[in-house]
Length: 236
Image (cartoon, rainbow, N blue to C red; front, top):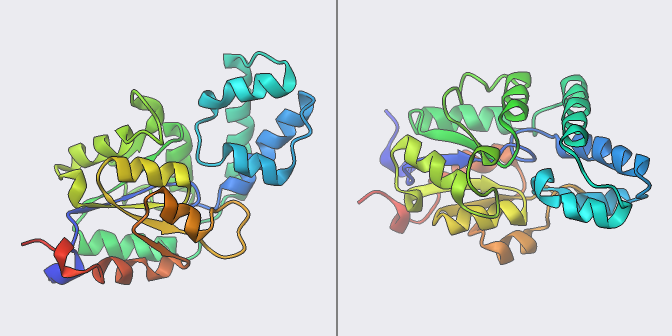
């Protein structure tokens, strides 16, 4: 039996990219290559800064401004195909994420979900690749399927509603300022994952400024961190 003190929230909602899977470098390498093909010699650092945590469909005006190319559905689909091929070949889990998710799933008795700004196919592909598809089966939510994607709270509100929990009693696990804003706007308590020396992750202060309540550097620490939340967050 899991003690209530070990589960002070009613549910735990995970982002996917950068939280569960180490995908951002792979995805941004594909995107940067395609932007170079359009004539925009964007640097790796700027590509991370401009696109990580955001839905690419929402950034088409930025691409057009810098390339003169009017982004088409065909170009976006080509990006997704090339991205998925690269992820299938090279994707790895975030260190410690698999064990953390399985322990949280045990403690919260299945009250967890994956709420990503990415398209559903990408999320499902990635979770299957790292062996967490069964844990999140029926509990995957895509910002591409909600009226607004992150930083709007829609995808987190949808996940909380599907689990039957008040979003203000949920913990959200994020790694970008955009995602943190989405979780905070949903009313959740946001934990910001920020491993040191990672070009694809935001530094702690950026996440705190965006609304994170806590930051941490090792995903293996997450179950204990959730359990250590002050008792004011615990179930009465």
